[in-house]
Image (cartoon, rainbow, N blue to C red; front, side, top):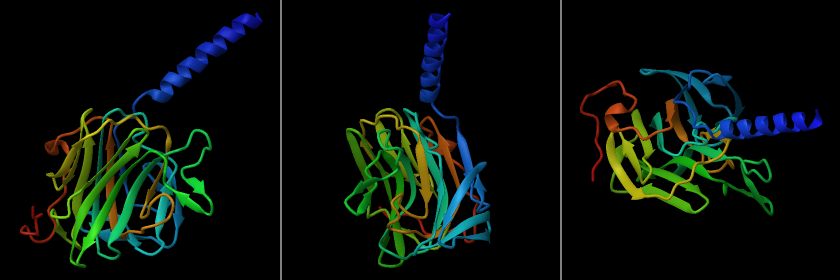
Length: 248
């Protein structure tokens, strides 16, 4: 009887392990509340505000100490991915890390690594960052890192006006890592990506609470495969149809 129980327990453990490795389903988060996003509880720091915009409700961050945290890595276990977001950059500091998906360190259970008195975001991660250029324009920095891979897609010649709504995306198709603004390719590179484990998300700052974001976030979508630009979230036309395009 005891042997039977051991066999059953072993089978359940194997099944559980396989389930944990199953790729996620496509998930959409709409930033229309400060208590729950995508059905998940939200931890708020600073004073981010829920605002009305032409696209619907969004969360606005002041670039000083506003941030939110969600206890899920929505692309964990994905061998390919598309990470999309609809956001409005409003200027501020030259370097801002505004959407961070972090793997939880399996050895420590932490989303950050403590080095002396400083915390580092050394865990496997997928990020959206931006650079503000001359206080008038911005460029996207899509970044991914993990065991055996580390790649930033930053093109300072691909710039866009501040204060407008944009769709941004990064994709990985099993070979190439690519980034887009409003469906236009910004950069690409080959990448030896490995699926990341469960973890958490910070929005408005890096996971270790540095380089805060000044602007607003309306929506994000996470897909466990590489989408093409025609499959991306559609950004409604807001304001002038002749808004500034990237220059490259």
